[in-house]
Amino acid sequence: MSAKKGDWVQIHRIELKPSERVSNLPLDTQNVPLEVWQKGFAAHEALVGDEIEIETVIGRKAKGELVKVNPEYEHNFGKPVVELLTIGAELRKILEGEKNE
Image (tube, rainbow, N blue to C red; front, side, top):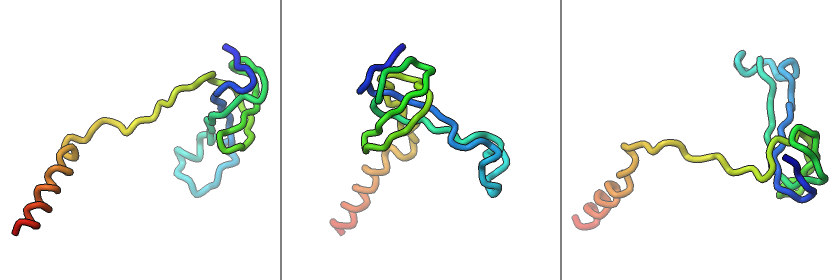
């Protein structure tokens, strides 16, 4: 897949090698690189796997390996916590009960 100038893309790069990380991190964190995934607009044409420069939505420039063209948003808030689903209604009942007393 390829990206054209101006396409919404995602890049990946290693920001710090394990040897460059600070020593006060937990060992399992110290032993892996600090990786960055960033989204922005392609500054030029490139193929997935090529190095590309992007401009983020706030105008920052960054370089990295092109990994996706038109990446989707993958974040979510996780699975619902059943015990928390009724808290709002329960609290309203408690507060309304205090008003009526």
